[in-house]
Length: 240
Image (cartoon, rainbow, N blue to C red; front, side, top):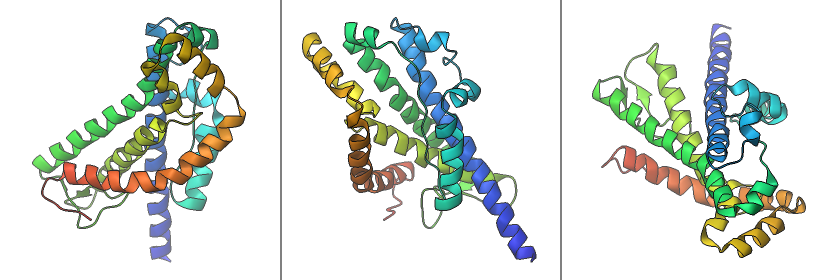
């Protein structure tokens, strides 16, 4: 009975750590979009209160994607998926397609910055003898605590934060609508070509097809890149 209770507590703690990492990462991603759009001339998200790391405005805009789906996906799948969004002015995007492309790029770059920051925190923990490279790695076990207690959940949180933000960075760069990667393409186009492209990809019928393609491709992309990232985090470790 005590073992069962302990397992339930561990699962709840893991779920809380998952949700904290998910909510923080998603909020930073969307706030980066909003901040960049504001700086480049579209005040829509700023006026909606989305230039903030406070998750409440983002949750209020997408409660299904930021609360319901992540919790259900963890209960039934053991990991969290979800989504969020910010409002923007489509006319601004058509008028300044390259600015809109930079705005699209800002979200994934924020997630990449979190990957780097988490890597620095893990290496700092190792330098102080708090963390160490585990014998085997997975999504939630990128680093491990040297002692039982407070630093065990810290190690799990950092592991999730590292893996999740690498996933968000890579997944959102896939060049299919409605992902950010499809909005980045105008950086490499002339203005008229970029405008025609934006009108084309706005077709809502592409969204489901794009996500279906992205989801099926991503399994082949993420695992090897995650492994490369782990071996860069621990040089000479040769994880497989």
